[in-house]
Length: 185
Image (cartoon, rainbow, N blue to C red; front, side, top):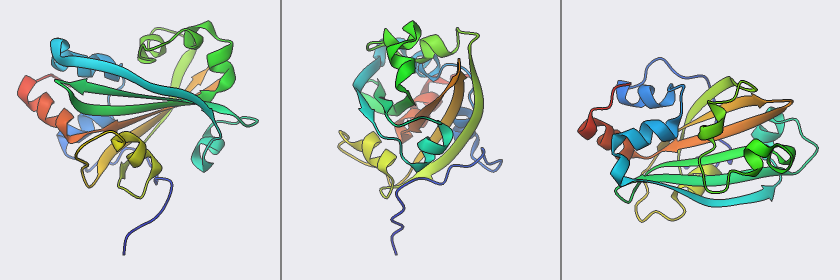
């Protein structure tokens, strides 16, 4: 029987993972820079959308807020092949008032996360997504072929007095690019 849960079961990084997956899920620096390093000439970063929304149950618990949040969806490709879907979720004040996020435009948020002493990662969760999860559908929305499952991680950051979630959903093409280009962990 198909599992129809709406929200993933986020948990700490499991110890028993294939090395190729664990390397990506546990990476602590800019994911954009790591993916771009695979082949800088074939890399593309695309901002899909940035909208105001209501938090889901997990986001409401992780992001104490009085309602509306910002959801910012991006994807990264190598040679026109999707390798990562990302979603940033945060309090609207982070995007309206704090110059660092209000001027992002189509640039990666990681350019600011790892160069600012006021922003600290506090938690890291991971899971496998299938087509019963909203994030799986968001990640595969414009894909021609959809894998049965996708590995995902969610990092929680403290940015000034606000929390920020960054979801990263990894596509199988990423692991083949890494093998072909032999990028160290």
